[in-house]
Image (tube, rainbow, N blue to C red; front, side, top):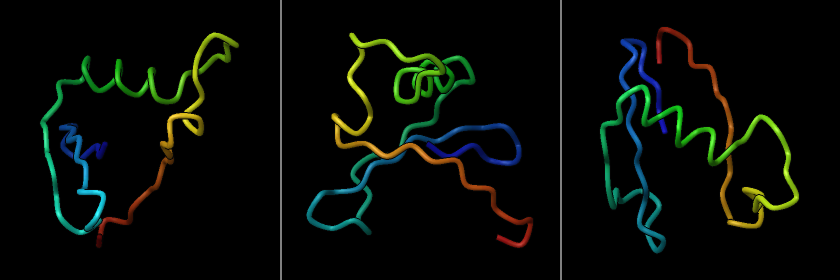
Length: 68
């Protein structure tokens, strides 16, 4: 998920065999993006929740410069 400077959000996924090929790209509302982020990277830990590592997911926050 990418949050753009204008506040819009896009969820994208690559094709497993070709990480440069986009399999999907979906625009999300702020509420949808918050729900997805909370699911993938919860602020609290519960033993009943699967971790992102167990699901094979990576959650990172990367700041980009204005020149990017």
